[in-house]
Length: 455
Image (cartoon, rainbow, N blue to C red; front, side):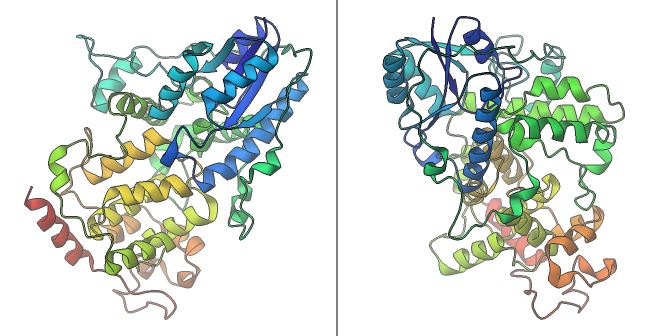
């Protein structure tokens, strides 16, 4: 029987349950659909599109090595799949199950027209399957992680099929280059060159991290050392399964358990959006709806937001992070928290504005993780930091030895000594081409505390 293999955020051949099932039944027609209609305002941002272009090219090359190929189509997923099924003479579609609200809607729409067979494989355990003793989903990470660990390790990752049976005739395929996923005027992605999207690049990244995993807890917070794995975009696009990552690094020793808990946090985030599909749009704690955010229509708030996005706040660690994000499509995890906290609590700008900016500029922009992380920092999430715990970016910068990181991304400060680079304005060493602080830390803190005191 001919089957359609519907790729989405699962762009790999190894440990790919949908592919294995489809190949075991007969000829397979792999398809990726560029669907901007189903997600609507949650269509992929610019950085994700850059990654997608290269990941699809890599996937097609891997499929061709197996005598197959990737069919590319644009449009609404259910309509495109129905038309493709008629072309190839089948009613059967295999896919990896997804949990973003728009993909759940799409799966329901496809299932009304075709025989849709959904498989698990993008998470350590199927979202929704880790529950309390009474069968309820967890809302807090710590007990969720404790329960998830009882089911670990995950099953050993499956190898890619030895062969992928091809149909007697291939349907028409659109050209990837015509999709316009890559920026041209201007090409703002020149700094993305260090990334290697695709399954091969993902495995190289895992291999590079294995030797560092034991030191993860010590180095992950040091942006100048870069002790994080940088696996997030590969995991987001499904170029490597979390089961594969787990089995490669679990025996590294040292503090590898801290890294494994971060993989668990990714599962937790999916469980959150399964319970609260609009988590990126609404405060999980309704009382925070009363926070008097600054009016984003005002020029003052807009100017401050623009300064934040451009890395021109006068706070070196924040500016370094925002410039790294724009240049590379990625930001160090510790710095993400500092930059997010700065927008929310120093600038008193609604966390949703920052979430949308990250959605457009991160190569690892993941609906669940992005929303859960922003609500954690803002204090509005079901499991979150307290709003009144306001990160002090200047002391955070010094505490986590960010001098080298600042020099790399804020060249105006490159000649400053470690003793002054974290706060050059305070030491009277601010270069003329580097901006003054757009707000003082004490002033910002008092304004934020006053804003939340009323609720």
